[in-house]
Image (cartoon, rainbow, N blue to C red; front, top):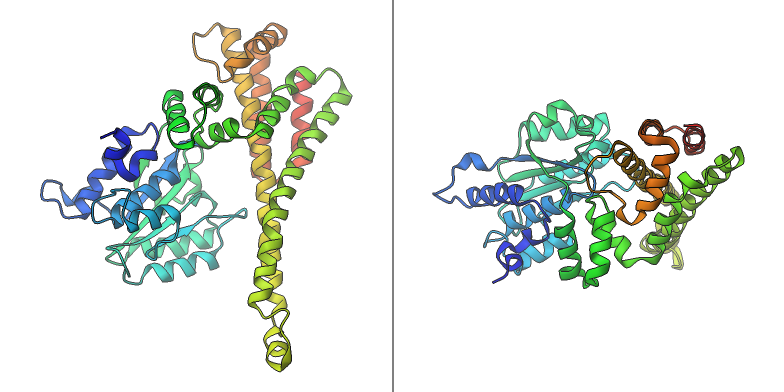
Length: 397
């Protein structure tokens, strides 16, 4: 039996042995194992960790193990439906826009109070819980303070912003911190699960900074590799003032273009499905009556789609900024002569050239500019202003 078969649903929780042990102990407690104290299981959990560490993967695997009569075998209908997002007793909140609204959270909380239908638990899994609005946090807090007897709340939030989850909610959750998985573990799962060539898997894992999803995309998508190459060429391309604005424009145009492609692929199909469900294309008095008053529903969908497109554009920008910050981190390391692994080992010559050009101190100032740009965009500063200001600082140092 391989380790993957032995771990069952936890087999895809990469490089987190301590966290898996905690979760499996909690599952045993939930099944009333006499050898495990009941305190090992609680009604509310907060999964934290760096981007790409697998917070939502670990939370969903935990949900599957709680519903599975064999504690997460990975083969039964409970495991398959939870992992596939179709289990009747597992409610997933996956924000597509900038925030999770109070209306959406109230609806989920209301459903979570029901008794389980097919499994032993009613489970609410909230990805990116740091996006809860104040009203949504308050609605959730009431349920966590007085939870229904067979309900479990699983919240996920990045460790870089754990304070974005209200302290009252955090204080009522058991916090499980995940770490950055090592490149070898990422490469192994890319080969085993995704069938990627070992050499490509090793390269993708080495440059993904511990982000599993990023490694998978780099290994499988030529366009992703081209985008990475373009953004990591920016430090060497800023040779004049005109380059500042042209590079900023190219970065923003790329983000808008990718967001548009994703939106067009999803939005048209969603809108047609909704119109059909509301009776579009029908004839007769019944169809005309059913169509009345549907404009508001369509407008609400369009509003959500616009918010999702904005979120997608910002995610693309943030991914590029993360790549840039990794480059300047490497320059700092080389400038100081630190014996640490590079985030971009395939760009060692470019990193050394930048280190000789502006040194560790200059790289640190530029890294601060990149991080400030990320914070500005997160604070809803217009992306064009934030990116152009960053490029100016990267040019001037």
